[in-house]
Image 1 (cartoon, rainbow, N blue to C red):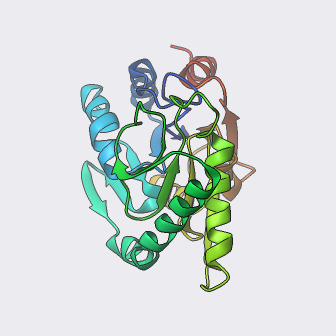
Image 2: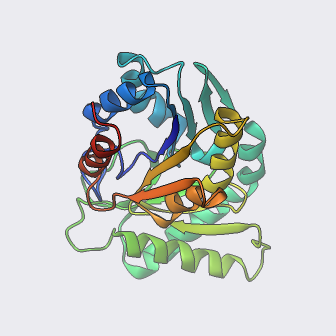
Length: 258
């Protein structure tokens, strides 16, 4: 019996590097694997609303909703045994700094001539601006593939966040914060809010007696790879960067032949 942990963006979505739908063929395959007696978890930095709009309907469709563990916003939002819970303490800890950081990112963007939207959104603005995703526990500075001047790339949004935090650190103590670079965003967050800690929680919940033979972790970033670091002897990381759901399906079919 095995445990499987899946990142979402760029992993079980259809197109790498841009926002795209979750691939239903992957969820169908995961359902088959679960029915063989294996344990399943999904881990993402995306918001709870994203999970409710995009992942949960597919889990319901393929009979997985109350059978898998889901963690969003790096542990703030979770679904376990079909029940949703939110750790409001993590949101409360970040709230006093959120507006301050956001305003500084916007100020840096203006100085650098990078178009940016102040509104917090759920979808990529087709007008091409850097944008903020609607989240509370982190500040998500998002890329935009509609920008044709390379002003809203993975590197550029990280630079906006880095400069902003560097400036703020001259007058504020941000030693408990870090900036995470992902293919779709620069995430300003508390250091304790990370996928490594979420994976530790998943292993404790889904394999409390250490009975699983091995864990397979699927992702497309260095952040995802940290999840396999909690037990290197039993956990294998599969990097599907640039392949997304096609890479996941290929590996799942190899590991779990029908």
